[in-house]
Each structure stands twice: as C-alpha cells, then as structure tokens.
Amino acid sequence: MTSARTATLIQRLRAATATATPRRRFSLDVSAQLLRTSGYVHGHWVSAPSDFPVLDPATGVEIARVSDCGPEVAKRAVDSAYTAFYEWKQYTAKERSLLLRKWFNLMTQHKDHLARLITFECGKPLKESLGEIAYAASFLEWFSEEARRVYGDVVPPPIKDRRILLLKQPVGVTSVITPWNFPSAMITRKVGAALAAGCTAVLKPAEDTPLSALALAELAEQAGIPAGVFNVVPCSREMAASVGRVLCTDPLVAKISFTGSTATGKMLLKMAADTVKRVSMELGGHAPFIVFDSADVDQAVNGAMGSKFRNSGQTCVCSNRFLVQNGVYERFVAKLGTAMDAQLRVGHGSEADTTQGPLINARAAEKVGQQIDDAVSQGAKVLRGGRRLHGSFMEPTLLVDVTADMLCVREETFGPLVPVIRFDTEEEALALANASNVGLAGYFYSQDISQIWRVSEALEVGLVGVNEGLISTAEATFGGVKESGMGREGSKYGVDEYLEVKYVCMGGLKV
Image 1 (cartoon, helix red, strand yellow):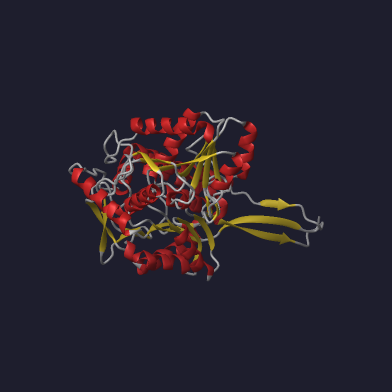
Image 2: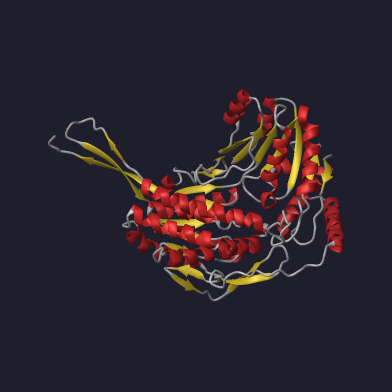
C-alpha cells in the first residue's frame, strides 16, 4: 500500500474509533457441561502445560482459555484413533448409524447453547448461528442414513469359473482440519462421513473457534461414540504448524480432510505426498454473481443479500464479484442499496436485531479496508458504507464503477463488500467470471432457459446457483475445481472420500 493510502486508512480508523459506541459486555451463558476447554483424546479430557485465549471478536473480551495442545498430544490422538479404528470398523453399519443419529439428536437438543458458542467465538449473529447448528446437525443425520448404504458390487466375470467382487472398506485414520467461519458445520460434514464409513478421526479446529469443536466432542461422548473414534486437539496459532505437521505426515494417518485457504492447502498437500495419503480439500473461493438482462431484478437482489452478507461476507461460497448487464445495471444497484439500508444492522451477534456481526479479527477488517481504498483510488465510487468501524467491525459497502484490475476483483474479500462491474454480453460475463485460478461457487440470475443451460455448463466452478443465492445442503455435493480443491463433501458421494475399493477375484469355482 502506498504511503498516501496508508495515511488515508489511519485517518479513517481514528475517525471511526472516535465516534464508536462504548463497548458493552455480553454474557456467554451456556451450559457448563458444553463449555469444555481441554483437549479430547481417547475418551479423556486432557490438559496441556499452557493455554491460549478465545476472544469474542465483537468486543475483544476473553471468553475462555483453552489447552494449547502440542505435537505430543496430536501424536497420542493419532495413536488412539489408529487403535480405535480396528474396533470401530467392525461395528455394523446399523450400529454406526444409530450412534450418529444419537449425536444428531443431542445436537438438536442443545441447539441454543451450541449456537451461542458460535456467536461468541465467531461473531455470527445468533439467528445465523442457530441456522448453522441445524445445518451441522443435518450432516450427522444424513450420514447416519448413508452409513447403511455403502454398497459394493458383484461384477459379471469374463470367465465362467470366476466371480468378481468389489468391496468398499474404510481407509483408516482421518486427520480433519477445519476453519473458523463454520466452526460446527465444517466438522460434522467431514467427521460424519468419516465415522459413517468406519474411519476414525483426529480433529484440529481453528484456533479462533475451538469451543464449538470441544462441545461437539462432549456430545459425541454422551451419544456413546467409543473412545478414540473422535479426538480433538485444540491449539494456538503458534502451535498450529507443528500440530498440523503431525496430522499430515504421521504414517498412521491414511486420509486428510481440510477446509481453508488455497495457500495452506498447497502446503498440506506437499506434506501428505511423502506418505501418499488420500486427500480431500475445500479451498479458497472467488464466486461470481451474474445478473443478466432477462433476470427478475427483485429476485436477484434478494439472492445477493443472502449470498453476500451471510456471516458478514465470511463464507467460502460468498459472492465476491458482482457482474451486472447494462440493461438492468441501474435498477439492480439502486434496489440493492435500498435493501442494504433496510435489512442490515451492525452489532453484537447476541443482539436480536443484529444482521452483521464483526469480522473474525482486526486483520480481516484491514484487508477489506485496503480493497476499498484500492478501488476508490482507481475510480470506483462508494454508494453505501465504506468505513472501518471500531475493533473488527466493517460497514457493509457497495461499490460501483468497478473494473477487473481492482484488488477486490482479483482476490477473495471475506468481508461485507459488494463490488459491481458492468458488462455488455454473455460472453463477456463468462470471460470475467472464469478469469480466476479458483472455482468453488458461482451464481447467476436469468429467466432465459437456453441461457440458463449455457451458463450453468460454462461456469468453471463446482457449485452453481441459478436464481438462488443460498445453495448448501447435506443432500448435495460441495467442492470446487481449479485451485478451489479436490474431492466432494456431503451427498451420497461424501462417504466415498473415506472408502477404498478392494477387488476380490474368486477363481476355480465349479459352476
């Protein structure tokens, strides 16, 4: 950033801080049984020599201190999972199914307290946190049912005295590394599938949001998940690299499942390569949101509000680049600005009318501020918002006159920023949308059925929303193309990521 831009940002921060409302204290108020702060290994809660703070990103207030489990605890967890695997895979599919269903029932029973944990450690508005718990629990429900549908094949043989069997068997111990933005759902989407297949799991949750993971471990124990089948190793940012190295290089680990940045995913892939581990990864996104002239503009605005501002823009499938065709550009921008004024309120996630919580930390807010400054310096105009507020809060911001060479179009934002680009033709929109090295989600609005087919097939992404801004569900696949990752989660295909196919040839049969 140039010195002039730096000075501008500092001035904004000072002005925002000077006018910010005084910080209030908010009570976490969850069941003591669910507020766990130790690691969880082989059915036991384990402490570490040191701990690290978990902060409420809305206030900066410390809400808990969690055991800072290092590589030694991670190794114990892997050993535990490896031992437990040889018992767990002998459970019948029905037995695994019933235990996952009990875990689902307990999540549903404790949804209010689990949601408050998310709100206080992640900053998400409480209504959204409740939605995440329902979404997270749905994966345990789904995979409890899929556990009983892991079918192999009997293949017609080319020779009469042979029979060909294809068996599906669990791969073994799975290392699971999850992000902070969906601290419950990213766990159940992975661990639910792993356990349904007969694998065991060692989880390293994000250092910002370990409380949700530990609460899930408590409920897994209550559900009767056997010791060692699900282990949780929380750690600080400083300890994360050494713990991650154990989880990605230990020869007893057969599979790695990771959700996070593309840069981190590439490092984990390199570590996994030495022992040729199975890997599934959901990495960065940069989703285009296209509004064609044929679109229902009101429907497109509603979709944009849901897709962009969920979790204050901090989801990997958030719309990041808004491409609007000339014929509806002015109407879309005006209606979107009006909707932002009417529907968005910044505040602490526990307050009933809050729709926009804080970003996860000050660094995240600084990144959004830098993108805004860059765009404005190159000719973009701010129609709504644009200011950095106190702490890690950011005003929801609408930018127009945006061009493809601006920073907010070239890199993922992860914040409440809407940059709008004008385009002329469908071909131009597709070229802009596909001009990225990542491809997780994409959205577009059109009432032209021929165009819907063309654009759906042409978008270089793993998930497409047509006239819909919220598309995630346990029943459908989730995953990207290009540098957005490999493998798929959710759906009937999610279990396959944790299974090997074994070929058995039975010869010499008298038939």
